[in-house]
Image 1: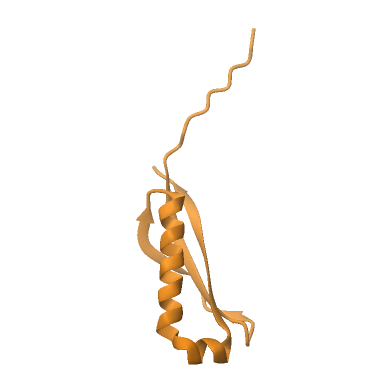
Image 2: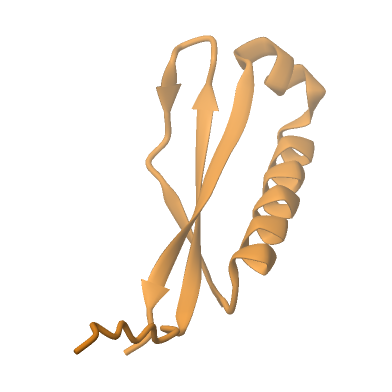
Length: 81
């Protein structure tokens, strides 16, 4: 008798979470979850880079350079129910 392992592909969605931090103060704002649910990791990551870049643009060079602002983000898998 052999042992058979069955691998099933679980359908996952991804949630994008961003965090705005100041390198000057060493503090971050509470994480912000984007309301969009992504079908795969790739689209979530692409969106993360786009949203982060827009936030940096919105803050502008003076504020970013003054406070050393930076945006961190991650895509968290959510198992579909």
